[in-house]
Image 1: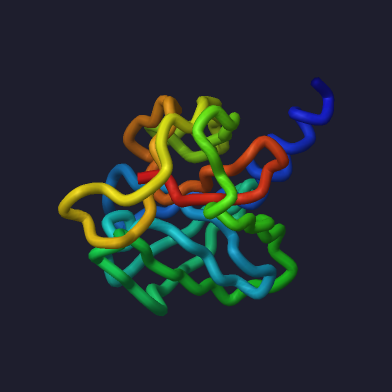
Image 2 (image 1 turned 90 degrees about the vertical axis):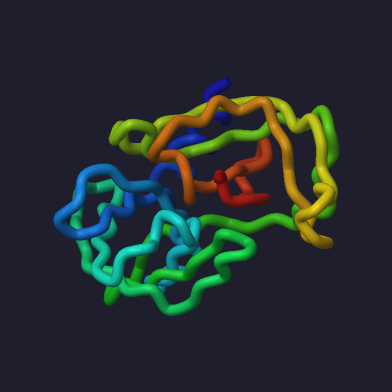
Length: 160
């Protein structure tokens, strides 16, 4: 299972903590590109002034560059390059029964991992045509905005 540990470590390094300045609590985000683009939940990025904490403890100021409240997604930008970006996968290929890994900062514990199994993929009545992934992954406050990855460590969704 050494490979699983390596996959988990790569995911942990591409996961950040997101905090509103001057407030307790926060959420997570995933480094989407090495040039400082981070994806998180819109409800995590409600504040105008945010800080992002990287896996190595560096704290960087962040700003919201895009938001989609309906999908609960936000794009943050930090002025940093060479960041360990996650690898994305096509979530359309995800099927019930597959193993998934969630990474986040539940209750402030940075880089925590949870695993589970996909139990459903598809639309939810009353939520439009968007596809959602349902999985038996235990999430806690602080996991929101972190990556949901397949067994190869490729991001297929954002935890909410």
